[in-house]
Amino acid sequence: MELKIFPDGDKASKYIAKEIADFISDKNSKKERSVLGLPTGNTPIQVYEELIRHHNEGLSFRNVITFNLDEYYPMVASRKESYHTYMNINLFNHIDIQKENVHIPDGSIPGDMIKSYCDEYEEKIKAFGGIDIQLLGIGRTGHIGFNEPGSKKDSKTRLVELDEKTRLDALSGFRDLNFVPKKAITMGIEIILQAKKIFLLSLGKKKAEVMNKCFFNDVSSERPASYLQEKENVEVVLDEGASMLIPSYKMH
Ligand code: PGA
Image 1 (cartoon, rainbow, N blue to C red):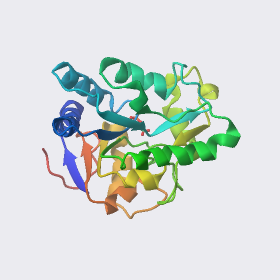
Image 2 (cartoon, rainbow, N blue to C red):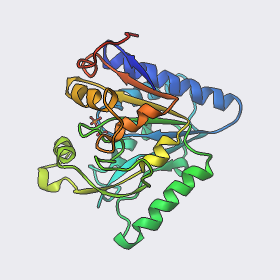
Image 3 (cartoon, helix red, strand yellow):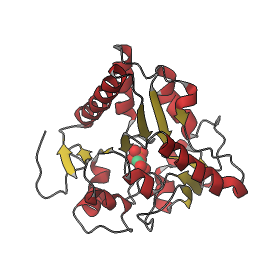
């Protein structure tokens, strides 16, 4: 695992977007497809803005396959609070990705079909040869995707209960806490860790404490992001705010 600290979120986001854009461009030139794992939340918004800018400058997403990390449950895709809507507004409506190449967990699946649906979601990822680049945010609970504390390293894509801290952090998107879903479908830790390259982006002072806990402490299921410590090909990318409590660091 490598730690990269940038002076601000703008530079950190541009760095990651360029890495992704260069990867897609290289694959496009070989007529190969790129498989991306994508997050939602506030953190990746600038990365998506930059990817749109790369698209406007000529980068094609026609050979890009995407798998989103999670979706609230229950949640109808057309609702404004859904991660389907988030992805359309923040990325997909602005690039030439093919609809059939986009995969986001379906938060409207009936309860008795969730298990088989989640197994199929993982099978699809594997059928594409796995995820080439996985972009991650991190929650204040140490979650990646919605893998909250207690998630095992070999956990599968599944229905999970959201931590109360996570629901509070999600509040701004909903009318009040009663409307914030209590559950979500999330890609499991195991399939996330199988990605060939992972960027975890963490921005702002409010993430400083969780960064310290997850990356300068033992690996523990109580801090799911800490599993990334054991993996190569992981870049943890921070701005100054998020790196505030980290003992010593290298500025990029
Ligand atoms: P945020 O969420 O980007 O809105 O801070 C990150 C996460 O919960 O993974």
